[in-house]
Amino acid sequence: MFLLLLFFVPGMAWGNQLFLKLGLDPSDLTSACLLFFQGYIAVELLRQMASQLNSFAQSRIQPAVLVLLSFLGLVLLGSLALKMPRSTHEPLSWTDTIFTATSAVCVTGLTVVDTGTAFTETGRWILLGLIQIGGLGIMTLTACVVMFFGGSMGFRERVTVQDLVQADIFERVHVILIRILGITLSIEALAAAILWWQWRELIPDPAMRTEQAIFHAVSAFCNAGFSSLAGGLSTQGFATFLPGLWTLSLVVILGGLGIPVLVDVLHLPGRRRVRGWQMQTKVVLYSNLLLLSLGTLVIWLSEREGVLASLSAGDQLGQAFFLATMPRTAGFQTMDLVQLAPLSMGLILVWMVIGGAPGSTAGGLKVTTVWTVLAYFKSLVRGEPSVSLFGREVSESLCARAMALCLLYGMMAFACGLILISVEGLEPLTAFFEVISALSTVGLSLGGSTECGDLGRWVLIVCMFLGRIGIITFLWSLFYRERQTLTRYPQENILLY
Image (cartoon, rainbow, N blue to C red; front, side, top):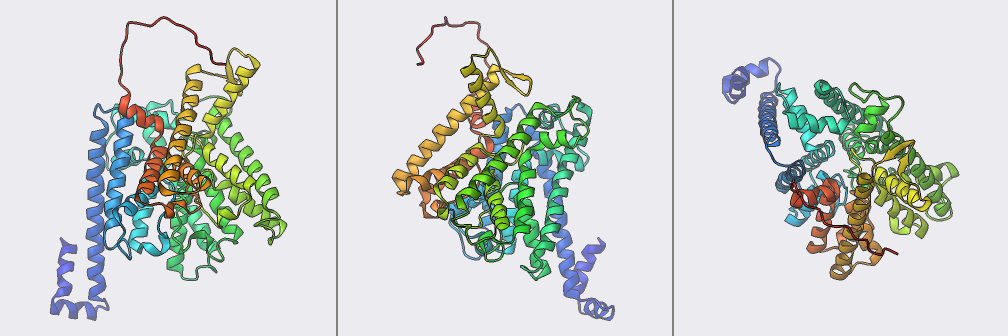
């Protein structure tokens, strides 16, 4: 009531005189009161939405459908927010608006307009919110908000979260969830502070530098690849400033490790009590080390007499490391990828397909899927009776699911690539590069996204959406039904080779 009274007092003549005598600007106080009321309304709306989402999650809807609907709803809300006149300098078409919102929610980074020049400050903050929510996961964020306001999660939500963080202590799931949220925000805040200090000469204005540092820190940890700079990171100065590129690379790597790996490595409460690291942690860490090292070496050898020829040996390795990190799956670009040698281009395509770790914001097939398929092939070639990884046996059902993921990914990429080639007239390399980048939620581009018409952009929208929620999740939401059958068909073999 007191703040409401202060809101009206500055509009009166005697109120203005009183505030001026006290050395206060009536207009500033009015703006402060408006900001307070807007913040209160926003918090109340967030609380109500979280409550509704929690009730929705406790329904009998299958988890796959729940994930699908939650991401679809966020894309629609984000599109409406970006369509507001205050979000853009010039109005965008609905296709471009939905494309941008989907890219942000699915933490992809593909754009059809320049983020730094097309969107206002309000629009950039909306994009940042979509990236953060899409990166954390809507249901995870909802659970945190519900607990923050004193609510409680239902049995289904606790089981889902327990599965996500691989916790055995069921009663402490909410503690682990808060720890995960704290780790995310802490890494982003630390990265923003480091970037703010590193970019002091590139962006002299402190307020503008703060906005840019926060935006890039969140975008990097969520593996989104969005840049709010006019022209992106390829802008003069940023593209060759290695300390900033190394900071972004490290944050991208941390964001791509995944929640289960962070829980295991950091020994958070609730981790499964086993000696040493779990098998998934070993696969993720070893594969990251292998892919980053091999990628850096191959790109350096391939480009040291090409696009990196004008740099010193140290700068060449730094740029090669950045180029090897971004396809998995952040998408920050500091140069035109068309200039790269065929070997580098081929490696980037393969790295985009592999992607990051499960449970993270990275996309792609996931390193665990690729390792499982390779282990399966090894056992098949050697005639081994079972598939094993790091001294642990892998079930046949898991191998079958990994093979199915690879098959579905390949079929989807091939079909969408053919559509872009036949309908939009793109070059085969450009078409498949854009499709893989969208399907793996990477965001690297050869320029095909901006060359496409509305149909091609909708194809990429579908690829980004399916790449974020997972093709298997999408198919389960459409076709999976729990069935009990008492009959089995007789077996018969067919020739395979």
